[in-house]
Image (cartoon, rainbow, N blue to C red; front, top):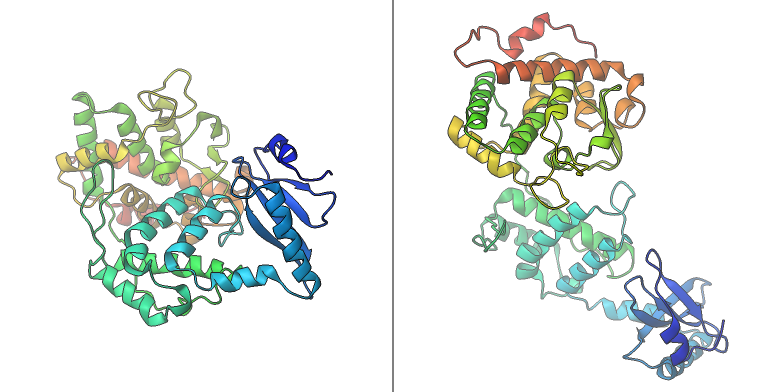
Length: 429
């Protein structure tokens, strides 16, 4: 510990995984912090009259010299000695923050891993990308300039109504994505995002209260679309036809695996071969939407996975055509397949829902289906695959059923549907 001078601050180096702190040897409670990004900030740390430790940022190095920061620190610490709480004063000032400023605070803090989600883990990057999109597309344009302290429940529900009516909708921008149509589903999810981020801000004393607490969200319409037996046969026939015509083999294989496994789109596309266990008939995901999971797959899905086109040096089951990443064009391939098969409103989620629906047709319980999809917190999804052999049997039965439908020509005998075969299925779970 030494006196904080320009030379001292200049020699400080960041650590890639954590903040670096250096304390002044002469003025107790005065220090400098170096973020992993290299940003250096002066601050004071003290105990208020309640005995609670508080930290107050004085300013960044460059905007403040060490001498300026020392003078400011001495002034603030003198106030502390008189019973003042400069950190509380800062929070009082923040009561005047706008919705836009609080949104920016949330995105920055969550991206740094300092805000935990409902599962008590840092919020995932994929969730933050969706939050950012809702903030920039709907929340900021409609409420961004408003002060949080003046916001009411009526304002929040008014924003919801405006989004549902399409007031924040916009056309497609150049490049991938970028289109927003509004609607009740988008409105409800956006209000959920706003309520959540304001809740974090209130909990951490960034704002005084959460004005969105108690908001009534529009009911989200659950998607019921699934592929029927006939549609699966038609899709299978078109997959064979387009494969012979030169359709992307990686995209076709990824779509087939989605159907045979019930995996989410990014679980399939980001799948690495090292995660796959042929012996245990499972995939050990180090991370999913619900955290690390072990998910069983049937024999038909395993064969599909093993037959996927390989690319030398790539760890992915479905590698990109160039670069080090995984394949990303599966939605475009699916759109071409469905256009040829004359199937409407088919998304990767519909493939996952089809897997679950056929499992239900075959008589498997909701608990078993939840385990297959990774919704359950019991058994195989969190433990060892051999301890839940029932799920292995279920996954094998469902994937075999779907594979037979995909590989059967539409003109073949279809007198029995999956639902009708339910009566003759031996259910193991």
